[in-house]
Structure formats: C-alpha cells, structure tokens
Length: 166
Image (cartoon, rainbow, N blue to C red; front, side, top):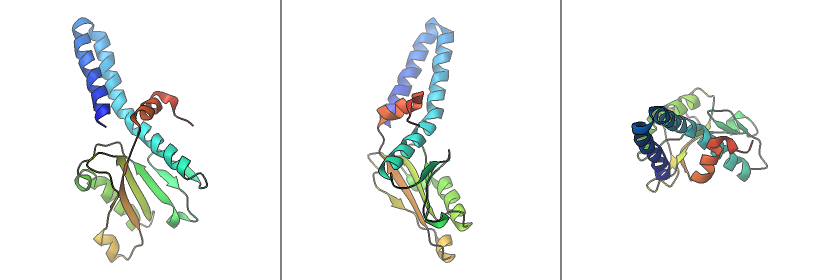
C-alpha cells in the first residue's frame, strides 16, 4: 500500500518539476495519476478474483464488476465477495457504509454470506467477523466478514496496465 502511494507521489512530483518546463506534459502526468487511482479499484477486484479462482478451481466463480460470486448449491449457500481498494486502519469506522449496505442486503434476504475485502496492512492482518443486533433479532442466518487481502503490488500494477489474465 505504501509502495502505491510512493509511486503516485513520484508521478506528482515529476509533474510539478516538468510543469515548470512543459505545462502540457505536466497536465498529462497529473491526468495519468488520477487514472491510476481510479483504476486501482478495478485492478484490485481482478486480482482478488484471480486468487479466489485459482484457490477454488473446483467451484463455479463469477465476476460481476462490484462483487465476486462463489456459487453454492443455492443462493443462500453462495458467498459474495466485495473487493474494496481502500486504505483501512480502522475498519469499523472506515467501512461503516459498506457494512450497513451488506447488513441491508442480508436483511432483505438477497444474500446471506458476504465478505468485504480490502488491502492488508501491518495493523490489520486478520478477518473481522461482524455481528448485527438487527439481524440477530430477525433470527437471520448469515456470515459477514471484513477480510484483509495480501496483494502483490507488482502483479496488481501489471493488471492495472491491462495485462490481467482473462
């Protein structure tokens, strides 16, 4: 994660220096930085999909843009994985909107097993199981976890450049 910031900061500083010599090139470099940040979500999603697919080769796994579906015998047995490219130090605070959305999906009966994945940091390296009093009161059977995901930044950057396996 720190490596990503370092690369982006290097691009930013080069753009500032280049801007003194060539404003057009500086503008292009800053646009590249913005694209890099936006497409990291897509690259992380593809990376998580590839790792899940490789480790679960006997199961049907599909990629649906926002989420990855590991198919079970029926929808209730299926696992929905939501990759999220976000620096997370305080998961319950920083992912509160994602957690609320997952609890809402479970309460509606649309899903019962949801993992929200984010890049692993040295501070957060273990799964966190989320319990919801609202779902407990409804006597819903569910599994909601926050899952830090170790990622190889070199491979992630290659995927971001369009070299991901399809």
